[in-house]
Image (cartoon, rainbow, N blue to C red; front, side, top):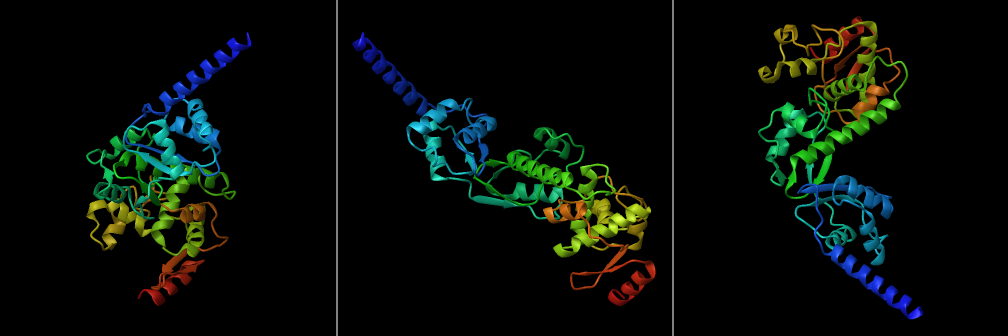
Length: 326
């Protein structure tokens, strides 16, 4: 009896070894190629394997966990963004993850860029696969599965690490998901009593703040001016929205006739916020829109050195204009 138990134990052990050997050297069925996925810092083996299942790298996690533990590498997998440009076996994947072969190349989207500028950067990047190049804006949003009518402002400006052959679809999805995370987190922690009904309105304001100043320290004050004007029913009267509404007609100079030409984005002729963001706001502008400075200022004028002079009333503002701009 004991001999039979031993024989069965040996048989089962050999069978398990053979099965795991077969699994380790059989290519995974990837959800798509190239495949991009992110392993979050601080995750244990169970969490890391779940993240790969959710990304579509593998169908189940238990076999990969057994392989990793059997090889004593449970604590050697490195977090980061990874790209798989071709079929890969579990043992090859484990080697890649323990070596930390993360995507080291990058593409940068600048704060204040429009969606068109972002797409230009994607279309001209030599390492990016241009799957959306000939798509309309609506087709891009449909491909991403994003329930929006306009893309402007909904992609976070930052540095994204990529591998050669990375699809622009996956990069856009990462930028969209990152913006969603930032705006939702900031919205939850927003100051009380702000004149926004939705996170979208806060994002619109953030995009205006982004285009009005490059000085991070001034953004809460810029936000306060526009919020004060909204509360008083005053028009925002901000040039960047007018310029955005002019589109291709804008030649680099804004004229009186431009300020009088009514478009949905002309905040000199229309009250309230424009219908969409006008650019990609960075995190500092988002936080400024949701945590404005405590100020009664209603006006500001550029001083010519990158900063602004803020005024509480029109007379003071006119004097500041005369001083700094005439």
